[in-house]
Image (cartoon, rainbow, N blue to C red):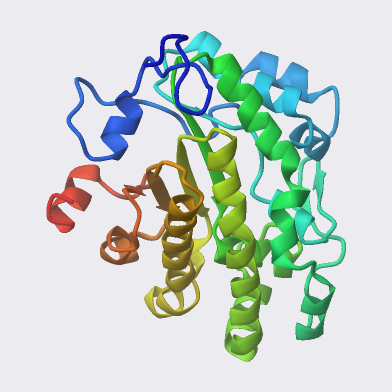
Length: 298
């Protein structure tokens, strides 16, 4: 700790590092706790704040994102905060229109239908500069946390983002996206590569802005069987981790633990454990003890 109480990046010194130590595989005095959708509709103050403007306007307001991120910590003794944002800011930054329809969820008025539609996407190298508001929210939140707990940054994994961009919103079957995998495998890989190339600098930028851990959400892993997952999801999950770690080192930034959460991806636990992440998230269908035994105490 420096004499002025600030850490190496000029942020307040961290007082509770239990979550980070657990993520690095170190022993802790207790099991740290944080919640998925930690800032959410279960909080009346969240609903009051969100009622003032539409969803993505909120995401673009660093002040609002900071407030929503901190709300749960005012109520509960949590061991980490996760920045309030959305995985679909990345397709927006690539030039796609995305709206949040009340009672329906995300909607893409012009989803990707043909391979030629990929030509309309912005270059992935421009995405990080388009998402400066996320970085500002992270920096502001890190300052206002005052070292109480670590701050988690996140993004959606390439396959999950692809499903929204092709389906045009949520889907129970992912029929359109899976049709791409079968009928347009080369175009699918091209899109997944564009998304990977956009995600890496975005995640590195989150760390530069103050994020102390990163989570990659493969929310739609369960729509792929083992073969399709190993071909169209896992290689890009691996590449994100590999490139983020390399670019953090190149930028002179300290490494941060990375978490991979593949919902309904129980069939790929062994592969995910070897994908370059420090933590593998489990969903409610997987018993933690069985997963640990399956992975040999990993």
